[in-house]
Length: 479
Ligand SMILES: Nc1nc2c(ncn2[C@@H]2O[C@H](COP(=O)(O)OP(=O)(O)OP(=O)(O)O)[C@@H](O)[C@H]2O)c(=O)[nH]1
Ligand SMILES: [Mg+2]
Image (tube, rainbow, N blue to C red; front, side, top):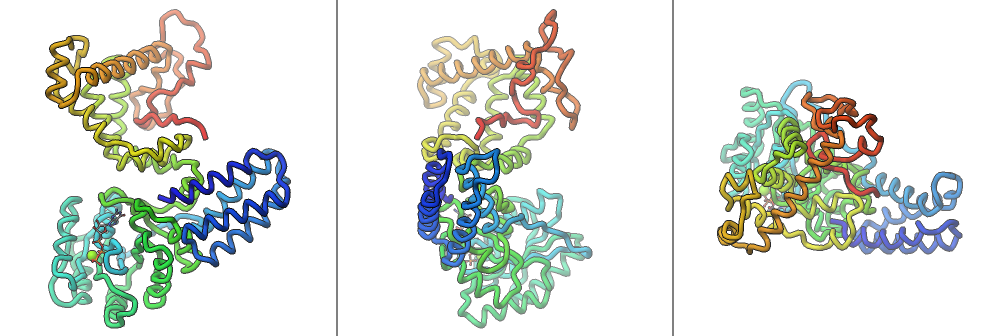
């Protein structure tokens, strides 16, 4: 997502960063390039103009702060202005005092309304809510079925009745009240803005249930059209925000960067894939940092927290430090990383990862192979890999459809990791494997793993990053 724009910014800002002083012509040249880059990314002309004007004004003042070089200040300014364009703050959802909170989804055909309805239901559910979905797309015969299939995966009920979408939605609202569902998400039929009849219909649905939030689902791949669509819908329905879908496609980013400024409504959620968990609240600041190649560590941490149960992770950390971490634990951790979503997507959020790696296709099958190798071992082998000799190795290779060399390689890596972790525990960093939930890790004075007889724990050993306390090593290379 945003790759080409990100590449362009990388080049332009890279040249500025290195400079001690910025001349007016340096600034003018950079602004010209930024303008072109934005236009090529399909950003709305007015948005580009405003962006460049604001940047120009800021760059010329760029020598005032002493802590940053002028080049760094430009980067900071670009980051801040991009954040503004993307909407500034993320949308804070509030819930209706008298439940349910009603969320209406509208949009063009195929924009992603039905999938987004289910994704949104999943999102609310993961935030402790009890959603009910309403299938109000009675146009397309299979639409309700599609919603039911998706909802089945996340165990959220769907209400629908054939006939009239307005009546169905009203009945859905009554059903939510009756069954104590606190969020009602209404999936509607896809419609073209020029189709007056269908536009009137969604306005009628909206009048009938008076939604707390009306979100327009917009396909990011639609480029400039996405913005025009949003304007047209906004004229019929009071929109509260946008759900931007298909950001995983080769979208140039124009829609994301234009919609807030042109329509005046923020992007509330963004969808980055077909899976139901490829969906999250949209955070302008994080997105700006991502476009500028600064990574998105916060989203990464949140994703990790969703997947890793804290206690489980602590137990694994403990075993790792004690050297009793087995290959089963190893595969278990791998699976969790995988559950965080698409691997390339995860890597793209990490700061400091070289561009070549971000651009390369990360092969999910590689993880599958590691898994296959471990699963081809006997339980005994998984606990004590040292017993794996030549013939066992050959058997494992055959069982996993790999080669003996790959098996050896994996074992070697696993043993090295275990040795290294054990070594660290001996150096007194055991405190990170604390038992108490929610407590801060203490800088251990009497850590159980501390080598007997060592006097003062050196500062260095205290700061060795091991598995993060919340379960995942997020000690990533600095920016
Ligand atoms: N890659 C990708 N595909 C998506 C995303 N969101 C939706 N899709 C796909 O886009 C297609 C259309 O999605 P739907 O949710 O059926 O769209 P819709 O707006 O309900 O379509 P209609 O009901 O026909 O108007 C489906 O194949 C989805 O899997 C996304 O963020 N990324
Ligand atoms: Mg649909």
